[in-house]
Length: 493
RNA sequence: CGGGACGUGGCGCAGCUCGGUAGCGCACUUGCCUGGGGGGCAAGGGGUCGCAGGUUCAAAUCCUGUCGUCCCGACCA
Image (cartoon, rainbow, N blue to C red; front, top):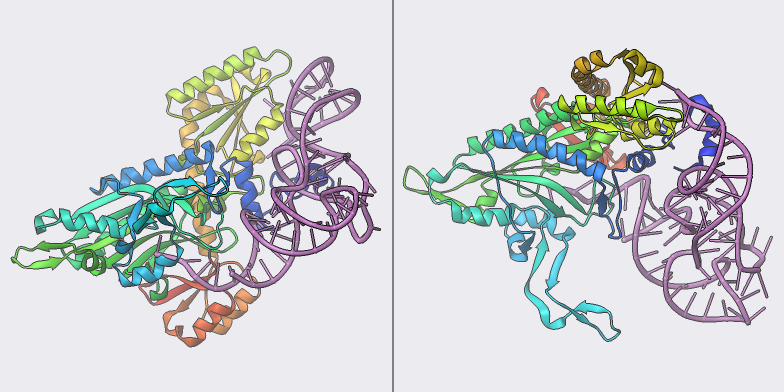
């Protein structure tokens, strides 16, 4: 927070005070940082560009992993694990790949430390590695190496592998979740006998990602193909989901690449076909990272902090006893309610701490817990409780019986999940503007308007490149729905 | 990597121009009153001012260097 709470009170007044300052309107990037802090998701670490993902933030990631991992396994991909370190020579195998990655890799050059002249530990000169290793920025090359050994015959195909791991990319400008030096992700690597199968697979995996975004993240992004200048180095095609954040900027939410035979050739992934001849395989790779958590935050949260879609919420319901003096009876009542909800598969956060009730409420709000239940003595006596939906705020407060709540809670959560997706999708669609000329695009972004411009791909050319540079825009994607005739242009993270 | 801003108790900041050994709000502790969208009163605990040098009788304040953070840009498989 930039202001003290006292100042906030003065300037904002009690009724309009927000839990997060600045607001989205005032300063979106800073708001984003403060939502993360207020929800206790992550914090900076002593290592530049790296973050500590705190338990609550990691719990969200675990829910994401579970959802995505299930879907990946549903399409017959198997999980495996490959080394963190990749021989330098592997990275240089694929020419375009080298250009794309080499510069921003962390390199391991020694294998032992010793005390230097001043007593500090230094890499021992005689422990220098003959061939340095890079810390994986992505694993096409080392997985390709294994594939080349595992694949002999067309009967070994398709070979579909996935790994959950960390990678490092020495980015210039790190930002929490969105672009950290080290990040967590899954990377899938599939190999096929034919170009058609590989192409279909790249599309299929993008579809899997889209399902996860819609069903779990409640984010309705735009699926499409990357323009050649935005492609993964070494890919013949890159597919993406571009998600629009509340400030109108785009987040490349995941990618799925059709690598053609480029990596198969450089990694020597060959098989003997039914025709008895040797052929190079056709491969794909597809990745989904902790960046998605940044997208989750920027899509849904408001000026009071995080708002989580129920399916990715570590807690579905926060139960807050409202007590004075001896609250033991209400506490016990709340415990029973919590147990009952848990038995129904609801994830419950029961706040029996001795904080003041108003603090408990704000805490639940900032954590983005979808439903907040409040129970006081009076309600307990009447067998009732009140609850509020986080996305709708205090005006949505409803008072129902405990039985009714338990009977409908799943429906309420499902409704909230659906409403959030509808809202996200509508926001995105409402902020895509068809434009006929580059002049129109220039005017739009010069006026700091929010959203994407959708223009005809016939406008591509030198003028388009100048415009992009001038206003720091980029081609986000060629939406599938426009069948390659249109491109979305916008600012991005 | 270029431009800008910033690093002072857990958090947010003031003090620095005119050097004299640290202050405020929140949080925290204790007590009492309160208790359904951030309550009140009172008494307390906690920091040597990012780090390293330099100038000086004296440095949070001046100088040099360095590390880190944030924003904008470049970059971003």
